[in-house]
Length: 476
Image 1 (tube, rainbow, N blue to C red):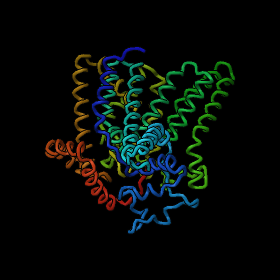
Image 2 (image 1 turned 60 degrees about the horizontal axis):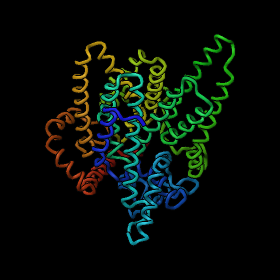
Image 3 (image 1 turned 90 degrees about the vertical axis):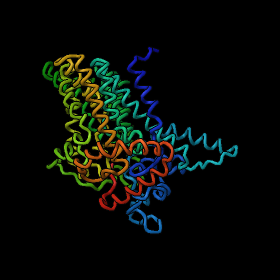
Image 4 (image 1 turned 180 degrees about the vertical axis):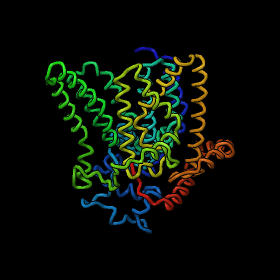
């Protein structure tokens, strides 16, 4: 086994040092995701009633009455609770949760007294640690792929920048029961394996790629857009063969069909659970509208209501770097740009493009691997256009500023100094960054590590108030 480089060891060390930040709780959208894991592990059926009743107050609003009973309209025509969230995170959590369940049962057998119900602390710790690991693997894979095409120092700097200056850390540490860190992992794995096998993909490799594709979609449905990588690749080969030989490559057509079939089979967990819950394989439980003719592209990018670039400005050079990547690898650059633009259009058409309760535009966390590669490409371009030593100094200084701003904004968002829902005042946010955050951060951080339940209870009370002000349906 090859030894880890200095940069690789540094990434591992950073992950280990930040592990105490992991927050083992289930709330908001995470209730729906975790319910699949708990219900199947403990009850062996899709019965989510205990999950709904045990959920945080803001999640239960509109789903239960004043006496705590689940409302009749919370059930679907099949008698199941309306759980429109995806099963993919539960699939990825399953190894850790099964191990935790076995350990709890064994501990109880010798008088341990820990409830084997999926709600006791060992289960939540397993879930949260699993999410953190998948988030780190997303970054690790992204770093390795960026390093393949660009100098390692820029790949490392870009990885650290996206790690701490994007929306990822919120859903990797603070809200681990949500799906976004898993989504970043699945997409990174898919893009890495696509790139690794693109020179000449065998039948087995197409099968593996299809399996990863199915996992990626099971975790987060919009990830299907990432399939533009193999689609664009195959179309380019078809076009070349038609132009040179006048016929399409029959071998590639068959491989594409195998890929499609395997992807479909791998998506069966989603299709089967939707059939059970809603009575139809194609009913995913969403009622939000899509405005295909009028996407809110500028709002998605720059709105104070969780705009992608306004909340996480480090993604501006990351996206610009995807264009600059053309110098290193045209195919990777063109497909990265195509996927980002298509993803942007799709989110812009979605009624709840802002993510309702969201840090930044959380939908785009899926594209973490593209942002890491793009940011590394931007630093590499800057080093060649300017001077390498100056770029190192500037790159670390700029990344440090992005990280400082982002972590301050995460603190404001998490403690409700700014609203978790709806537009925020940038004037107030900027003032808080200078005058409020430095004074409160140390004390709150100590409470977070030692008295999380008390702090989380306060945050939940504030979230209920905001939920009443913005009574919108929680959404993926």
